[in-house]
Length: 238
Image (cartoon, rainbow, N blue to C red):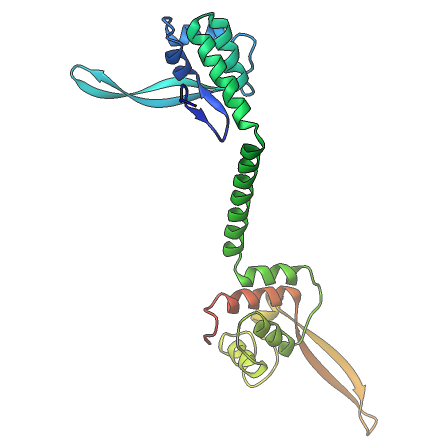
């Protein structure tokens, strides 16, 4: 099919200025469009757009901004019909034939595949954007359970950070989360809500009570340390 009008295949819209030229209308564009757009709704049947164009001016070229309108195919066919000219008939038939071509099973399938391809690319971009630490952090947020440091080390290892319990404790001490030479969290870490201390009292063999303290990483702490450690290059230790 010889191209009579440039149609935006994604939006199936026609430039009213181009239609004005193809129909060889003699009226000023703004007057012509105001007359033919009666009964149509802006935002549904057409949208107003500003386009830059080059025009000859005093022997040179000047860039001007012109108002244009992007019309639906139905509106364009109506304008062609109302123009009551041979060019209008030709242009209207062109649009009708184009619609028939668009609606063939092959073209419908082609558009569906294009949409699917764009969707897949969008999903791939989301996956790249969501680093492993962010994906895992989402899972941590959904959990309110506190875990032991060694369990956190296992989770880190499962998600690509090659680190064990001892090295994780060492890292936490070096970065001020765990007190040196102990497994006790620092005041800073407690204030951040990264740990909780479980205190239990048990009776010893001599009948005297003994207090035991267990340090556990809160859900907030898990997300915090996952973000810290999985944000580094995989396979590299700090």
